[in-house]
Each structure stands twice: as structure tokens, then as C-alpha cells.
Length: 366
Image: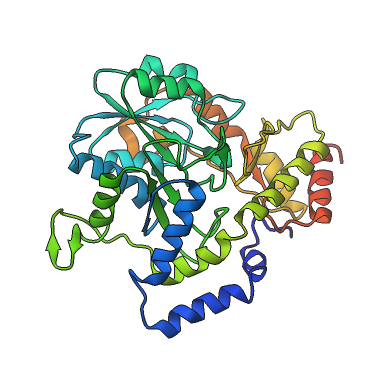
């Protein structure tokens, strides 16, 4: 079986540094809000190209805390609208509704899977205060039209950078393109920990201070609470692990790009639509499209290739958002019915890639 993502193989490739980092934390006797988190925050901020990185418990919390901080700062208030892609993981939308803001869904471009910039302006109203830009699957979603709209309507630009660590746009990293960004370090991400983890990146001093307090029970000074906050902090073990992995992120992303290039060059099947090549893509996922997606997935499973679907049900069709279920987003729905993610990681061997391509090319031909 060729695994979709062999996390043990990936983590083993960082030894002995990974085990040494964990042991260093264990021996320190200090497990939260210590030197490891501070060191990682400084290095990740420098890598992304921002002044501030605030470690939090996960990527969803990073987005939740950004929006909550803007509410505390008076930038946002309940009922304000946030434009967000209809084609995204549900976390993007959960962060909005959790803060009693209104998500305004916009269809994607079928070729990129990211939000279609040409459809955003028609959704802007007098209540619109922000655009949440999702760099889905590791592909940059920023473009000149979005920048124009942010400036024209004086909107906040919030990036969901959960899947795109290391991706660039016009010489800058995603996670530094807007006013603030949520980052995820879930184990399967390009930069993944050994458990949940996330971070907010921003150049906004006030936002950074507010987010850090909100994620620490609303407190900047111990036992003094300025906000009704929550507990969302990056622990020392995760920070130490991420610091080790960050040093190799560019190299590992390049290996993902090489694997994607191999797929694009060698998969030749009339029923399989490949993703567009993009020099800025860091290939968190390699997502193909096929009308008989479920049949293709069953075939690949039978042949020993593990695949996943990102994602089988769009957010507006989820029970959690029953009030959105009657909305019609045909491009989003087509994507969710057709997409299939092939194995992708920096540790895929060329013989594995060749085998996957051969199996795909022989689909319905055997």
C-alpha cells in the first residue's frame, strides 16, 4: 500500500534532531509559554516576513482569535459580513460564525479551486468589513483584483494560510499579504507538529497584543484579565518540533513541487483533470478531478494506492449550517463531487510516483 501521507517516514527523516528537541523540553521542566515557543515564534515571523507571530493551539483558533481581536479593537462588530470562499474547509467559516459575523460565500475558479476574484465585488455590501482569503491546497489565492477591492472598499484582508506555509506571491510569503493570517501546524501540513498547533502572523502591533492576551484567558499580566478570553497556546514540545522542521521547509516544499511535476508530466488519462502548475504552489495537496471520482478511488484503493477526498461535502451543505443548505453554488458542488487527492509528501519515492501514475493511466483500461 502506498500511503496517502506517511507521517512516520517524514518524522524519521528529522532524526535525531526531533527526539533531541523533545528531550530538551522534557528535561527543562517548563512546558508552556517558555523559551521554545518564543524562539519558534521569532523564527516563523522572520520566515513569513512579519513583525509578530503568536503561537496558538490550532489553525481554527488562529482565525477565531484574529476576528475576536478585531471585535475587541472596534474594527469589527457582530453582524458584519466577511467574504469567504464557498470552496474551503469548514474551519474558515466556523471562525466567522463563532464570532457572530456573517459569512458571505463566493464561488471558486474551477481551474485554481481558489476564490474567483471576478465574483467578489458583486457580493460587497455596506456591511462588508473583511475578505478571508484561503490559499487552498497550498496554492496562492492573492491577485491584483483582490488587492484593488481591499483598497477601494477599505476592507480587512485576513488570510487562511493553514495549507500554504512557504508559498509566495510577488516576492512575499502567504501569511504576510494581508492584515493578519491564521496558520495551522496540524501534523499533516507542510510544516506539521506532533499534535495540534497554530499561529497568528501580522504586522499589526495592537492586534498581536490583543490576540496574545485573548489566547491566554484574556490576560497579559498573570491573574489580571482584560478580556473574556480562552485557553489557546502553542506548547513547548510543539514549538521545539516545529523549529526543527522549519529549517528544512523550503527544501521539503521543493520536493513536493518535484513530485507534483512528476504527476503532471506522467499522468495521461482523458478522464482525469490535473491541477494547474503554478510556480508559487507548495502542493500541500495534489488534487485531481474525475467525473467517476468514487469509482476511481475504489480502483486506486484496490490497486494499493491510498487517496483522500478534500472535501466530500461543501460547508453550505453541512448540517451545521442548515440555514445555508438551500443556497446554490454549482461550481463548489461540482468540485466536491469530483475531486480526489493523490498521495503527496516530500518523502514520496520516484518508484512510488511512477507506480501511482501507471495505475491512474490504466484506469478503465484493464
